[in-house]
Image (cartoon, rainbow, N blue to C red; front, top):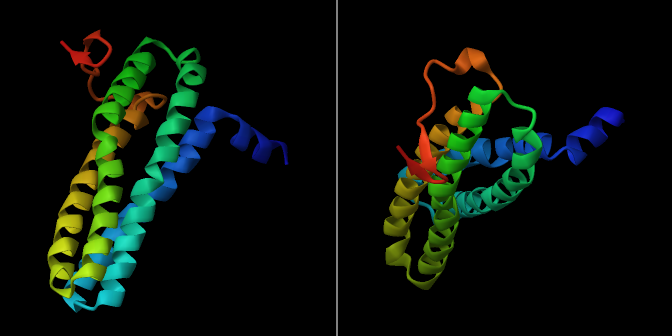
Length: 168
């Protein structure tokens, strides 16, 4: 019971736990949507779009949890870990909003498909491509995040910043 409470109360653990649902879910949603494009049935396409919408939207909770976790985690890290945390945060700030935009695009695709049958496949293709871009962004962000506490993943040093958000 104490472990469960620590997982829920600790902002760093909460961020990691929340991270896995949308990332894994978005990958599954992309596969469902890709299959729906092959199948070309509105019910399947709509299911894929709703999955993409919900998993992309769930990233907002991950970003909020990451903001809460930052000060808690920063003080516990060594110099290289802090640099990787700053780089991870930089990447999340820069590319994480792609997934929020993807949620909006998915919602618009659902509305377009309801409004006009001829737009369904085209809207699905747009979401398929935007979701793939979002997944690539998530992999890049997660790669930097994995190097924060795990020195064995640090094959290089993180890029150096002149100021927050500006690479040198």
